[in-house]
Image 1 (cartoon, rainbow, N blue to C red):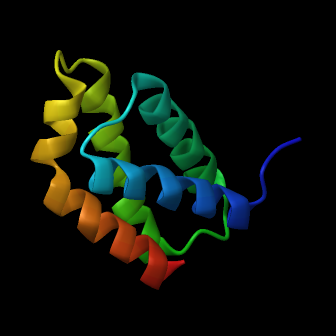
Image 2 (image 1 turned 135 degrees about the horizontal axis):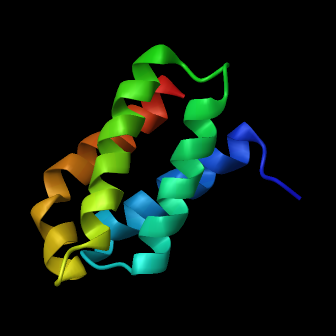
Length: 92
């Protein structure tokens, strides 16, 4: 059963918050975030301002796929993660 938009947003915020707070994550989490974003971008009701943030998060997940040290990639993006979680909360 597919997740509705509200649940997608909740999962997205949870994963990004975990990355931001724990400074670690998994490749499967990044892949899941990428799939969620693809679905949310395809949704015609997604806020246009939110789409910009989603594109930045998507780029983060795509870079993570080729990163030899995922935890370092997450650590390097701490400020971005914090901003994205904030953006998701205010724009959703």
